[in-house]
Length: 338
Ligand code: BYC
Image 1 (tube, protein in one colour):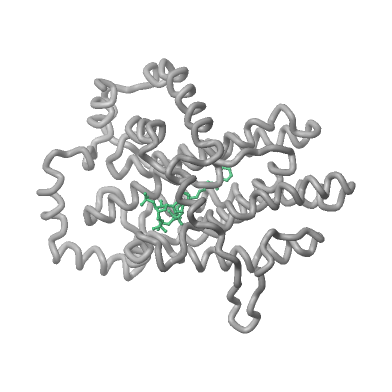
Image 2 (cartoon, protein in one colour):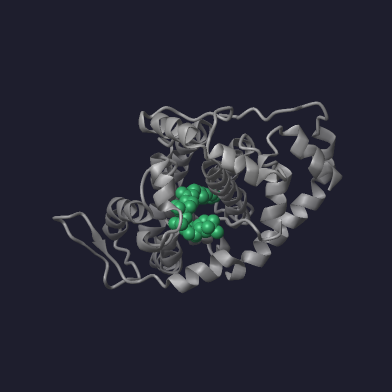
């Protein structure tokens, strides 16, 4: 707790933890300041950490960037468990590099979230206690090597669709971090696609293994873009403030258009008999992907939630001495890494 308090002081902001937060909020919701802020956003100017911003903009950004950062470190786990079993030296090397990149993405993102006043130690505690969310997809097991290729190809592809859009967003440190992340993700996508095509064009056993993995991952991937727009809680506000640059349904549709043809071209099928594209509108029709499963998983009751958080808990306790050794008492502010 003492360590935590020091970190709040160290990171300067401490905004979310201020006992006078509601007073600040009133002051921050000043209509003149708000109008200036929104005008800035309308002209496409970036908002930087030292700029005035509405309380709700800060709160939403922290929520979203923090969830994204957690998704990167938890997302490294299903693939990480395959490093020792990757088929062949070249694939092992590529997988090690990819997993390392994902952790690097988390570093960029935690640092972007810290600029908004939430200390990293608090974010980590919120992850481990189950208070903060992370992407639904990482609560499923990677049972075979084919699962790793599905993650590397389709989850990275889905992430790129989302991140390329949001890289044009209004908050400077987040949008710049996303630009750097997308550059690396595009290598991950090539690596994933190569492994995916290799299995799809290999023996009938390899093809069957890939088809089985695809069948299991399809629904979580459809969920990845978030609930349908008509029930999405945050989209409207986030779009108005240009944090989110496309809606959940638009991103899902874009992903379908870009990647379903590539899957079908390889002779694979998808476990949805209603999947079809209206060529005139570009809109895809698909079956209801069981949104009750999505909500169950993101609330902590997916197949691997407990296992994932247990690994983080272990890493947290085992690595504490390193963080204590690196802790700099006199460092006052976080400098964004991007
Ligand atoms: N998973 O109002 P909505 C990677 C939650 S990692 C879990 O539509 P929003 C990689 C949402 O948080 C890249 N929860 O939300 C790493 C909200 O709950 P709260 C991961 C989800 O924010 C390693 C509620 O549902 N990418 O690529 O407008 C290896 C209502 O939703 C999900 C990101 O994190 C979900 N899928 O839109 C390989 C992208 N979807 O907070 C690859 C950053 C929704 O009110 N995030 N929820 O309790 C975003 O772009 C947006 O937050 C979302 C959701 C599009 C995901």
